[in-house]
Length: 164
Image (cartoon, rainbow, N blue to C red; front, top):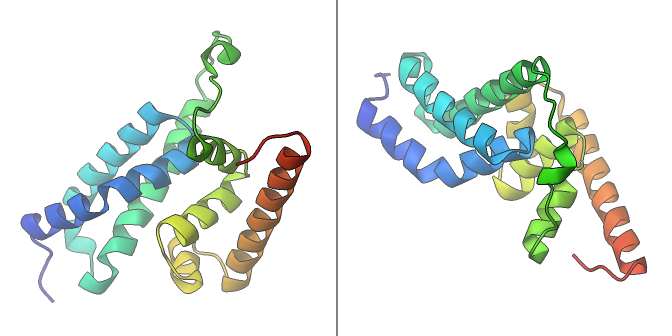
């Protein structure tokens, strides 16, 4: 099979750029870091496009690069000491969608990533398992755990007069 050319890769990236940002944001919880991760992913995709074996798995390949870049960014970020008070930058969510995202971002990373890949990106359990190098049972468990946690937060919100 021939190597994916630059035009094909550019098209793939353009078709998936919003989903790439959402996935990076779900991992990094920060707009600037998510944008940086997407940019780094694009650079790496162009540098490594010869490693793509099947065009049918191009989207998964791209998302795998993004997940790896995002996780590397977390590791690098943890090494930086910040002296600013993070609470001064927090804002109340403005819309129901913003509030839902703020709740999703509270999930543990391993659960959050699976939830975003499944519900937002539309990947199957099998595809997620392949992307994250985890058993399908683990993927299903994380989906179940995420759903239960979101249901609990929604119920807690209703009890306190908040609706997502």
